Every structure is written in C-alpha cells, then in structure tokens.
Image (cartoon, rainbow, N blue to C red):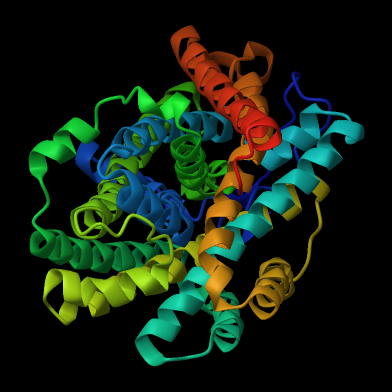
Length: 452
C-alpha cells in the first residue's frame, strides 16, 4: 500500500486500532503542494465545504422554510441565522476530528465506545440518513413531477441513478464530484436571485427578521417550525460526511501540516455554509414576500408553492426557476447523502463491499421507505412528511453532536489539535440548546396538543 493510502496509526486515547481510511477509494487523492502560496493552498482545500453545504439547503429545508415564511413572514430568519452559526461551529469540529485523529465521526464512535454504545449510535445514524434521504428523494421526485409531469413513484425510482452518477464521477476523481456539486449550487443561486428580484421583498422586514423574536418559545407552532429549521439545517449526516471527505486531501501529517490543513478546511466550510445561509434565507424570504403578504399563510407544500408563484409574481418563468432550483437541490443532496451513508456503514460496522453494491444498499435504504410513504399517503401528505423528517433529524442530532464535542475536547484523543476551551463551550451550548428545544417540543406534543 502506498504512503498516500496508509491508514492512520493507533492513538493511545482510542480503545481500538484505526481501521481502513474513510472513503478509501478517494482517501488522500487530492494533492496539496507545500510550495504553493496561500491562495493556491486554499483552492486545494476548497470543495468539501460545498458538499457539506448541500445538506443545509436540501428539499427538507424548502418545506420548513416555505411553511415558516408563509405563516410567520420574516420572523424565522433569526432561526435560519442561528442554525447556520451552529452549523459552522459543528462542522469546524468535524474537520478538527478528522485531521487530528485520522478518523471520521463514525470510526471515532466505534473506536471510542463499547459495542453497547456504538451499535445504538449506528442505528440512530442510519435512521437519520433514512430521514434525510426521504426528504431528498421525495423532493427530487416532486421536482421531476413539476418539470416533466413524471409520477412521484417513478420519480423516486429515478433517483436511484445517483448510484451510477457517483461511481462515474469518483472514477474520474473526487474533484469531479466537487465540481458537479458546485455547478448545481451555481444554478440554484441564479434561480433564487431572479425570483427574489421579482418578489421585491420588504428589505426592512428582512433585516428585522434576523433579530431574535420573543414569540419563539411561547408560540408552539413557531417553535415546531423553528425546530424543523434547525433539524433541516444542522443535519446529523453532514457531521459524518465532513469528517470523511476532509481526508481526501493529501496534506502533510506533521503538526504544522495538520494545523494548516485545519485552518484551510475550516475556512472552506465557513465560506460554503455562509453561501448556504443565503439560499435558505432566500427560500424563506421568497415565501414571506409572496405567500405571507398575499394572505396565504398555510403554504407548506412545495407543489402548491410552485403553482402559486406565477399568479403572485406575475411571471410564468418563476415556477420554472423554482422547480429547476429544487431539482438541483435534490440531485446534489442525494449524492452527498449517499456518500454519508457509505461513511456511516463502513465507519460503525466496518463493512467492506464493492463500490456499486455499497452505494446501491445505502440508496435502497432510502428509496424503499420513500416509495412506501408515497404510495400509502399519496402526494397530498408529502409536505407534512418533509417537515416531520426534519424534526426527526433534530431529535437525532444530539446523538451525533455530543460524541463529536467529547472527542474534540479530549487531549488524549486529539493531541495538540484538541479544541480550545471557548470552542468546546460554544459547541456544548449548541448541544444544550438543541436538547432543550427537543424536550420543549416533546412536552408540547404530550401535554399541549401540538400536532405533528
């Protein structure tokens, strides 16, 4: 085995030896020249952050943002901003874990915890990916239906083609995967830029919307949507994904090389997630400026939103741009979710399958429930299912965040790349906020008749 493919050595702070590298077929496949200047080094590390950012603007975000914008106007922009700050902090810890320990989050859980802890964590991670894929598969199927009148059931099956797409792209090099995702993000940004210009929102209301609102805790419906936005933004599978794909860079495994890699990887994810905030905010702003202003305060269905855009904005191109952006979001997010499924399966239980079989298995885990849901509940319930899937993600999130914070705070496990105290405190506070919101929502569902 070549030096570039060698697995990381065992560290004293872990219960077991490090297994094969994360995403072995692309592990350390992208060269980082030590002779390059700062900008060229930044470009060498740029890419993984945008694959992560895709998960922060997937179709599940659309459902929660459309519902929040139509019902409460610009008020939930603060929640979008807060959840994005949470994401930046947590994704920086993912890069730190990967670079400092040589493990992705799934491998770290397996190597740090006994089986009676790591196996339930694996089951929860798989459930989270099922919820993620459910939203993304249904969202892609809806986009295909809006653009080409393809039935949802057939559209769900078509999403299985992402297995072939990933294999083809990775066969040409991981940079092709990143280039494909970034191209889709560019199309999404253009589509929303045009729609926002057509909607002409109240920019004063937009600015005020980024300030905290006192109604959040007292209004159960607003809290439910806020929790859905957090669940749709800070997604568990992204924590596993980022800690795996950061290791595609062949940086020097010296203290200086690792610190430099951490700096550029964190910068990459921060810039990419700031871009994701613009997209998420655009969805909510579009819903507030069109549906809420027009008195349509119950729009939570992507298909209905598509139908209403033309009469409300007065232009037939608006629905087409909306559907194209949705299709790009769905395609890009299904690709990254499938990669996250591979990282989780290999990392937790160390299953080594042929590439095509592994990706087909992770895709079927999502497609089978999606088809069942679509057939049983029909198109009319897809909006509620999308929002519910995001709340499920939010409930699962602490089971990924807490181990991440624990590992990165340990000098024994991380060495000199242990997270500084202020970062550990910030991440712990984020975990506490998420857990508190979950408890509050459970209480309201049990005792205050808040319906999911």
